[in-house]
Image (cartoon, rainbow, N blue to C red; front, top):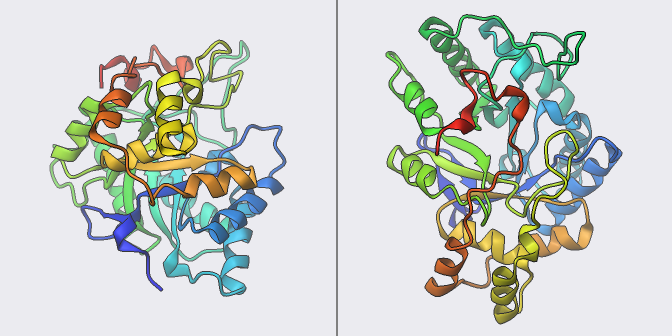
Length: 329
C-alpha cells in the first residue's frame, strides 16, 4: 500500500507528503527509548509521516521502531515518509552528505524522504551540538556567508537528492527573504519543497503561508499544540495555546479536544502539521482529525487568536546577520 494521497500534499518535485506527521522531539530528561515506543504506537495508530532530526539524538531508537513495524508487516518502507534535518554544525558544504549518511546509518535506512536544513545559521563544525566558548557563548562558524557559500551548500543538498539518499530537500526556520534568496540563486536545480516553522493559533504565520503558497513551497507546522517549557528555549510564563477559551469552546461544540481542533485548523488552511506526544492516548487522539470539519466561522475565530507569539525565539543567535525571526515573516 502506497501513501494515502487523499491525506497527502503533492510537493513541487512530484513526491507526496502526508498532511499529518508525528514529531519525535523530546526534552533531554525523557529516556530515548520513549521515542522508539511512541513511534511504534504512532505507526499502529496510522501515522505515516515521521519527523525527526540529528539534533534530537534519537534516530537510532526511531529507526528501530520503523524497522520493527516493517518486519512485522504493519508497513513497507514506501508507506513511510521520514524527515531528518541537517544541523547547524554541519553547514559547511563538505559536511552535508556525511551528516545525512550518519543519520541513515543510525536509522538503518537506505534513504530518507525529506532532508531539510534545520536552522539557517552555521555554528562551529564538530560533534558538539551547541559549541560554546569559555564564557558559555555559542560559537558560530566563520564560513563565508556570501553567494559562493550559499550556492555550494545548496548544491551539496542537491547532490544528496541526486545520489538517492533523500527524495526531497527543504528548509526550516527560514523567513521569506531567506527563501527568496534561495529561489533567486542562479543554477538552482531543486526548489525547497517545504519550510518547517513554528506555527499555531498564537503564531499563525498567515503572511509566510501565503508567500510559501505563491512559490509552491509547503509550510510545515511544528509546535502546533504549543511547546514544551524547555528552560533553554522557552520562557516559563509563556501562554498555553490549548487552554485558550476560544479553542476550548470550538472543541466543545465539535465534541473534540482543543488539540484536535488546533491540528485540524492547520490542515484546513493548507499547512502540513506535526503532532508531538509520547503519551499513547494523546497520540491516538492526535490522529483523529480527518472525520470532522471546522466551519468558516470556526476558522475565522481561530485566525483571530493570532498574537505573533513565538515560543522558540532562539535568542542566542539574535545578533547574527542570518537570524530569521527579525523579519515580520
